Amino acid sequence: MTHTPRRHLRIASVLGGLLLTSLTLSLAQAADPEKEEIKLGFIKLTDMAPLAIAYEKGYFEEEGLYVTLEAQANWKVLLDRVISGELDGAHMLAGQPLGATIGFGTKADVVTAFSMDLNGNGITMSNAVWDEMKKHVPMENGKPVHPIKADALKPVIEQYKAQGKPFNMGMVFPVSTHNYELRYWLASGGINPGYYDPAKGDISGTQNADVLISVTPPPQMPSTLESGTINGYSVGEPWNQQAVFKGIGVPVITDYEIWKNNPEKVLGVTKDWADANPETHKRMVKALIRAGMWLDADNNANRAEAVEILSRPEYVGADAKVIANSMTGTFEYEKGDKREVPDFNVFFRHNATYPYYSDAIWYLTQMRRWGQIGESKPDSWYIDTAKQVYLPAVYQEAAKELVAEGKASAADFPAADEQGFRAPSNEFIDGLTYDGRQPNAYINQFKIGLKADSVQ
Image 1: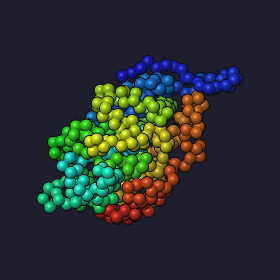
Image 2: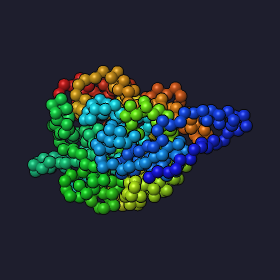
Image 3: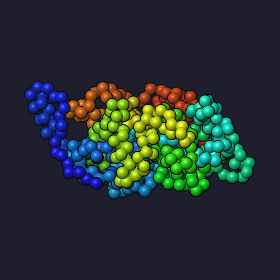
Image 4: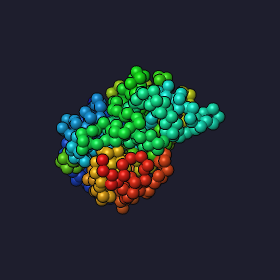
């Protein structure tokens, strides 16, 4: 999948011949991309949309990049192929560059200068589990009151224990948002999702667990649920809505309800690649910013077209009706219970594409909470690690060029003096406040999970 590149830049809204001449001269002197032939990997999920749109709308071309997009079998294969150089970069779980950099699982220096999106995930239960959960969920006008808390799941898990049966759940990767959101939701309801102990070689994450959580590739979630191998799962779209469509399960909560406007995927490249290809990297980010803007433009007016594109087999390859359930601002929980969730998928607004250090630090706090980081770390370590992996300077340079070219407005982006930390927020299902500048204090708030200075 490649386009012939158009070797020109569109200059919009430039007034005055002198300014036009000056700007044209400046652009002509800009560096050429170090690498024009680019291969980017992705997993078949709705939130790969910025890659598909940047490709289909010619934004990569306009940056002088010949891009091939290639679906990958699973998150591990995708990460390994970026590290080996088989892929120049990829649609990655936000935790993957961080996990690789700190050496949980694969050890490699992976960085990101672009956040793909906010939200986009859900937790789905089998019909049988939902039937039991529903007995403990408050109802209003015959429908469940949302958000549905994990408190309603706790008695179901206790029934399983009493019968000597394990309660199994799927998530997509050990350092995925889906894993941490699932664990966060379970723990907020008094359910222990278990611990990792890499120092002892235990990376199953099931020590002291009330629920056994294991890895299942996203497209296989519905069939694995239907077979009875798992009782529920945490995954991105369209695989929660697929369960509704097939009548095999019920999404009980979205990640928007667990952590409002949480960061989800990123564009990941190795540090060596970023260092060797700074101009190419910046141009990739420019194209993806434009894709995010297109996806959110005019109150999601382009989403129907995006759904058609994503439904193609070379991208997500799911039924357009299933993808549209969430991409067009709604979400269907129990069959027939479709509700307005306009921010279920966010690709640009709320500064969705900016790589905030505080987003990275949240993932690191959860790695520590569940034992993936096995020892106590000072606050400075969390901040330094975030700055090692997240590259807002690259993003800011890309944004600055888009503004100069008339393709964006300075008001579309965070202020130039942005320090990389979102304001403290308590928009979590448990109401706790997260301040990225105080990670250890945040970790110590949780009733379930390791404390900042715990020794396993």
